[in-house]
Length: 206
Image (tube, rainbow, N blue to C red):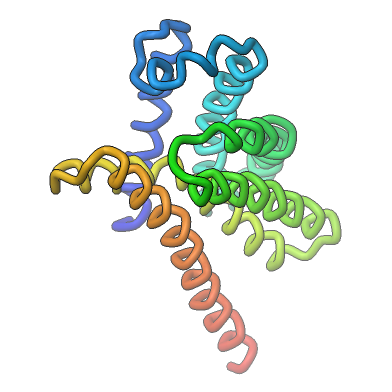
C-alpha cells in the first residue's frame, strides 16, 4: 500500500492535468515554448495523440497490476491489456519517437527520448509475444518493464517539482529530472523483478 497509494495518486493527477490540453488552447508553457513546431499539423497531431496515449496507458496499467481484478475477472485484465498494448505500439511509442527528434535539451536528451520510445515499444512487444506463448512469468516481467517506461511521465514531474523547490535552474532541472526518472525507473523495476524472482525460485526449492 505504501508503494501503490502514491503511484495511483500521482498517476491520476497526471491524467487530470492532461485534460486541459484537450481544450486545444495554445496558452500552455509547453506549447508556447515550441510554437514554431505546433505550426506543423503533423507535429500538432502527434502531440495530442501522444499525451492522450500516455494518459490512457497509465490508466489501463493501474488495472493490469491489480491482483484483485486479475483474480476476480481475467476478462477485464485481458481487455485493458489489449488496449494498453495497442496504444503503446501504434500510438504512444511511434509519436514519442517522432517528437523525440525535436525534444528540448542537448543531443543526449533527444537520444534519451529516442531510447525511451524504442524501449517502451520493445518491452511491450515482448510482453505481447510472451503471453501468446503462454509464458506468464516472462509476460509479467516484460510488462513491468513497459510500465516503468510509461511511468517516466509521472516520476519526471515528481522530480521536477522537488528540484524546483530546491531552486534549480529550469534547464538543469529538466535534464536532471529526465535522466533520474528514466534510469531510476529502469533500476527500480529490475530490483523488483530480482526480488520476485528470488521468491519464485525459493517457492520451488521448498
